Length: 146
Image (cartoon, rainbow, N blue to C red; front, side, top):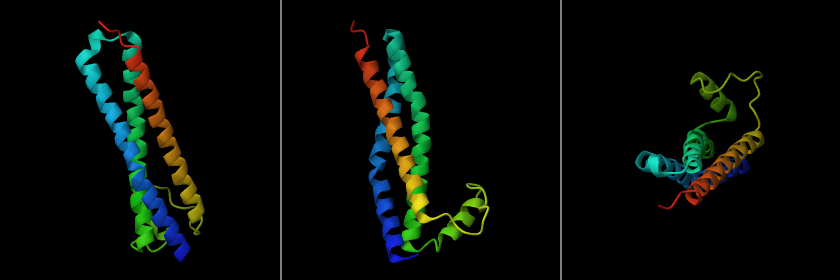
């Protein structure tokens, strides 16, 4: 790998570390929604119940995205630090672990494609968390004050 490729990997790993704050927010919304439903289910309106439940369902998807992003962070850090020798070696390791199908051709996927895929995953993760926030606010606004 070239110096520019290692710098790209290091920068992306840093961006993924910073995005962990969003993952914490998503987990917090999921846990708070579960707690609210467990404690006050009978006192909530139907809309609030559905909104809190939707936050919890989206929390499952959010946790999957957070897991994938943590894995990508570790892989890009390994590439940047030289712990993973090449993109082909990383593909082989992922296929041995059953996390990826063996590459159809001997050439490894380009680093730019991997960076773009990880950024798209980050965007999807942020969209899920934005939806969780909107549903959480909807649930709070539709509670009946008694």
